Structures are given as C-alpha cells and as structure tokens.
Image (cartoon, rainbow, N blue to C red; front, side, top):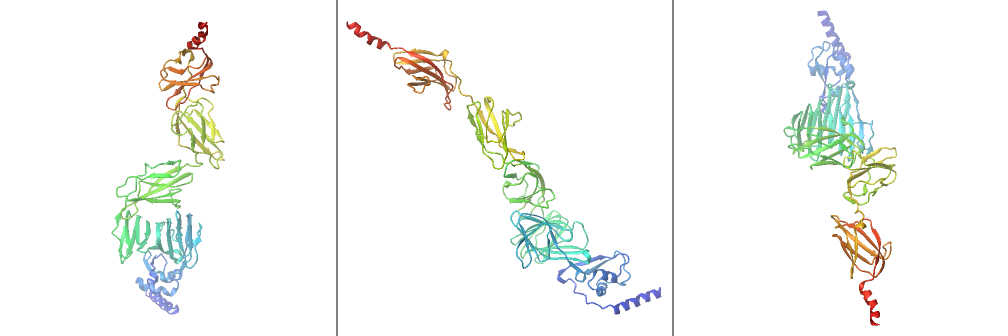
Length: 549
C-alpha cells in the first residue's frame, strides 16, 4: 500500500513538472456564476480539466479552490465549484419561436429588421415588439420568454459552457413586459439574470413576470422563488407575491398578488363586433389586463387590452375559438393571478342591416316588402319571419341573392319579427342580424252599403250609417265621376251621420270608406251611383209661370 501511495505521489509530481501550470483567470470575471459540477465515478481533476476547461493546467486552481486533498481520489457525489471563466464556452442564441404582429430586431450597430419565426439571435442583439405584437423566445437552457406588446429587450450575454452543461443568460429588459418560464427541465447550472433600469432579477427555475414602465420595475412570482435586488438591497419573492423597485430605491417587501378573477359569467360566444367583456367584481382591483390567444398555451398573444372601466373591449377577432387570459392590477400596479376563459367568435360574414320593415314599424299591407343593405363579398342572404322572438317556428324562411324579398302569403295580424343573414360564396352562413320587431295591423275593412241610408234634404245630403268601430271614422266622397277623380263634396264622422252639401240634380257617385284615426290609413271604397232629384224649391219656381196664366 505504501508503494502505491508513493507511486501516485511521484506521478503527481511528474505531471506538475510536465504540464505547464496555467494562470487561472480571476474568479467571478464578468460576474459569471460558478459551475457546480457533481463528481461521477472514475473522475479525477485531470480528466475533468481535459473535458471541460479551456486549459488543462487549471486543475491545480480547482483543487485549491475546492480544498481537494487527492486529485485522483474524488468521492462520487462531491460538488466542485469551478469558475465559469475557466470553462470552455460556445456562443448560445435566442430563438424566435412565434411572433405576432410587428416584431423587429437589430444588432448593436445595425438597422432594424423584421424578425421571423425560427430566427436565431446572438448576444448583443435587441428585439422589439410594437403595438398589438408579441414574440415567444426560447433561450439556450429551454427557458421561454413571452414578450408583450411595446416591449424591448437586449441580449447582453448568451453562453453555454462545458458542452452545454452550464448555460449563462443575461438579458436587459428596457421597457414592456416579459412572462418567463425559466429552466422548465429543472436542470442544474442554468443561470438566468434579467436586468432592468431599476432592478436585477435572478432565477434558477420558476415562472414569473417582469414589467418595466418608466422608472418602475415590477416582478410577480407565479411559481418558485425569484430574487430581486436594487440600490444595494434585495428581496426574495415567493410564489403568489410581487415586488416593485424604483430607480435608486430598494425593492419593496413582497406583497400578496390579487387572486384569479371569477370569469364564469363572461360571454362565451360573440356574433357581433366589437367584443365586450364585462369585468367581474374583485376586491382590491384597480385596473385590468386581458390578453387573447388561440389556445391556452399562450405561445402567441394576438390582442391585449388594459383599462380601469367596467368592461374591456376588443375591436375585432377572426371567426373561431379563442382564449382570454384575465388578471387584475392592484393599487401598487402589480398584476395578479391569471384566469383563463374560452370563447368563440362567429361574426363573419357580417349580417346585413335591416331596412324595412324597420324596428317597431307598423305595416298595413298583408304582404309588405322586405329590404336590407347589400354586403360586399357575399353570395346571398337568408331571411326568417316569425311570430315569436326566438324564431323557433318561423312563418317564412327564404334564400335569395337579392337584398329584397316579397312574402308569398298574407301575414297574420299582430306583432311579428324578422331577421337576415349573409351567406358567403362558399355557402357558409354568418350570424343572424338582430331581429326587427314590427306590427302588422290590417287596414279598415269595407263599408256595408246595404246598411247606409241616403236622405235628400233641402240643403244637405244626409247619410245614415251605424257608428264606426272604435278608432275608425267614416269618410264620404261625392263625385260625378265613377272613379271619384273629381270630388265635389266630402265629409267625415264617427257616429255614422255624414252630412254633404246637396249638389245639383243629376247622377253622382257616392264613395264611403273607413279611416284609421291613428295614421289615416284608408279602407277600401264602397261606391254606389245615386240620382239627386230636383229640390221642391225648384219645382215651385217651375210652377210660377203656370199660376200666372
């Protein structure tokens, strides 16, 4: 045993002479973290240096820093701290996994260029999202960063060490917000640091949000633990809490985040634009932020809105299924826990506007014309008429390529409803328009002339009829023309007694009809021919010459 020990000691001495002893770089250069390497069976400091260090001659410095007695006898499971400055380093990159809207990037000295999905960005690059844009970034360690609209981030350092066993990523969020899922595989030696104008955020494996607005940085931890430091002091922010740091000030003590809002009462289907979501009640909520994505993974944000009112409105979304992510903002400006809500948009092709009969209109015709606005880019229209607003049993269902339609049969009197929908060129019907309610009120019926008595008095022609039905009035027209084009006398009365000036003797045509007092809608004219005799005064005048003889 003594011989073996002496042999090993001699071998170490020979190696120390044969191998040039490289000067180890200073620890903590560029603030890079140390690599924590776990010793495996068969490891020696020499072969570890050969595999992972930039210079095999650094192994004595590793031995000294970790107080290793025998570089050839390492206990498996022992953790060695090796400065990253000694490790072999290869450049890493950030990959743009998805993008939505206007996303651009540039090098430190280059011009802005449009970013594309799958693009790899090197250290020193800057990425920016503009209005209503977002980008999902994948870091070298598998972390994902969802950059919201109007955000800018700089990739200060992207490095992989020791064949990728350690990754060091340092980002600088200039403005906007990032939603980060860090080190999802929970691998050791993955280091992520985010610098903002007011604070520094350091994580090892967690889910959190960082936002920068003016001189304020906020951080909300959704899972795990995040370290936030500023102005020489730091705080640890556990799950469900957040902190705020202002330029030149230490972060505030972590405070609880607002809980997820109750979204069960939010609309699940939209057939008309814009989309309006009423905000639920949540104590402590000072404002709201809502984001829309195609699916619950939220790898792509298509729209986002924030506000302090009772509702948040989105102007437009394509037909299909969507997911709303809603969270409250407290008085500190910290954003709370997310709630997800699925909904469907079915708004295209847009329904036409209803022209006639208009809403609340009264029609007198049993077969009124129906008309609506023309829609561009549609192949036709569908129409329904019903006696109930639910259209469960429509009276008429029609399809046409025109923007008008004539009902083929008389409508029943009373309240009725109609609506129309556009049909695209592929035959897909869009949503129904809002229904228009109208009333079909038939006009007055004909007058029974068999019940009319004509009485010729000296000065008037008197018509005697039964009293008119409630809401109606009689109208009498007297004309020498059977078409009643020339009216010589006219009278109205509701009690059935109509008095017309007595015309000269001769043949006349008497027309009688009922009028609706509310809108003067006339009923059909009942016309009869009458003979007006000479009056008795005229007879006496004719007899005067005879008497004189």
